[in-house]
Length: 179
Image (spheres, rainbow, N blue to C red):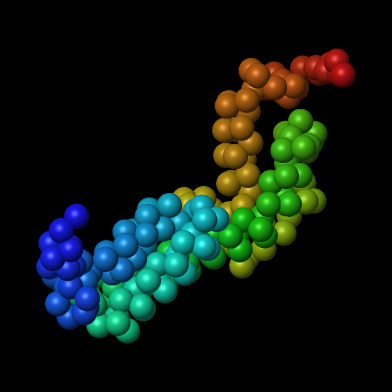
């Protein structure tokens, strides 16, 4: 290999590097931050967003090219971390109730349709502090959301699950447990 060819293409000092090679950290950081923003729901964002921030900061500190990409990367990564953290906090808070419903769907739905009362496990969502969330989704309150949820669940899983059919007017149904 010709030694002069190598040194001419890649000078030893960063100042002599072409602009396209100086923007590598900023460009990599920007690409990682965009992927984080697009897929912020993934737990991987808690690892890759900080990596993008570190690469962007290194690019700015080293006075390499691509400063706008680096700054945009920092902003995008911070936003994706905030969104991912918010979704994680909500999920962790709501997950036990989701798990309870999944494990007890037949009983919860049958009790709700029989009595019309929200099960005790979910009554905390009737609190006025949650009303803004239900209203932002187009429901008056949690009860109207829960009714819609139960109807949707029955429509989706009604023919494929062990849910008792309670849609008959006044007819008493006998549900056999085949387990």
